[in-house]
Length: 136
Image (cartoon, rainbow, N blue to C red; front, side):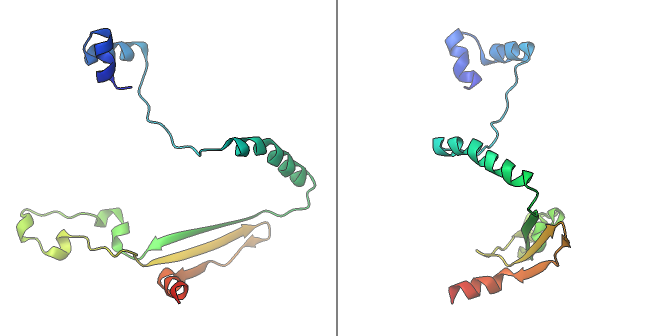
C-alpha cells in the first residue's frame, strides 16, 4: 500500500508515516520474481525429488550440462556504444543520433556441452540461416 493512501486513514501526513516506518526500521522492498506453481505441480515436487534421489544414489548416471547463448552482431550490445556526446544535437549526423534497428537482428548462436568426459567443441550458427531454413 502507498504511504499517500495510508496517511489519510490515520489523519496524518505521508511524511509522518514515513518517519515512523523509518524509526521502526521498516523498509520498502520491491517484489522479487518467482515462478508460479499450480497445486498439481506443488504435489508432484516431493515425488519427483524422491525419484531423483533414488536415481542419483545408484551411481549409474553421467551429468551432461549444455548451454546456449545468442550474441548480437551489432556494436550496440557494447554499453559504451549506446550513446554519443555533442554540443548541438541539430548538427549531429543522423547515423550518430539514431539507432536503426531491424525487427529481427542478426545473431550468432553459441552452444557448448560439459560432462565428466570433458568439454565439447563450441557450435556456432548464424541465426539468419536458421530463420531462412524454418521459412522454407
